[in-house]
Image (tube, rainbow, N blue to C red; front, side):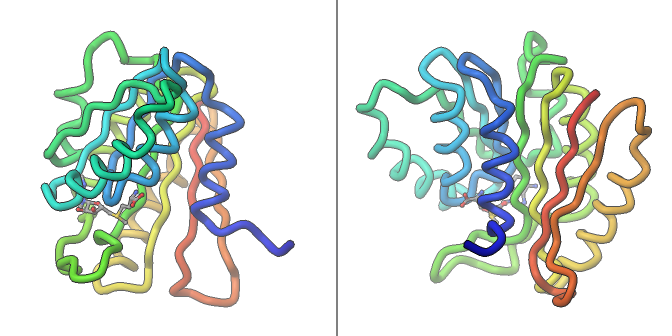
Length: 194
Ligand SMILES: C[S@@+](CC[C@H](N)C(=O)[O-])C[C@H]1O[C@@H](n2cnc3c(N)ncnc32)[C@H](O)[C@@H]1O
């Protein structure tokens, strides 16, 4: 069968932890594949908030979600055209310490014709990760897919890895899923709150 892709692995880690009725956050909505996944996992009683700085991304995501909205099985979804750096300010106070999962899929919008110079940036990514660790409930999970292959991606990946490695073990367990032979392959970091 081979190893899972980093994205499938992130979904597996989250799918085995999220519960119906949970709160979840997609920090980088993009085309909405992860937002839809989170809304399916939390079910009709759950809620998902998504962030993206590009209206083009949110339009694509809305179109994807619309195709599934008749099922009655999705959680409610709010998508914000806003940097995830503002996560701590805009997530409702009732979510603090109660969020089941926060997904980060860094880099640029993966669609034909997209502006690949609009990428996630280290400072805002780390600010959002800090906020996400506060929002998580015990046993809640953050997944971060990192792309060291594009310009600026390796520096961001290095900064996130350094930040995650320094989290105190009493606070969280941090693991990495990575192909060892290719330095530029995407890789995944998982952070589970104690
Ligand atoms: C790799 S894509 C995400 C893919 C997405 N999860 C999916 O399922 O298609 C990265 C996205 O992050 C967005 N982005 C870049 N900087 C951001 C920021 N500061 N806050 C939120 N989103 C950002 C980009 O616009 C892009 O759509």
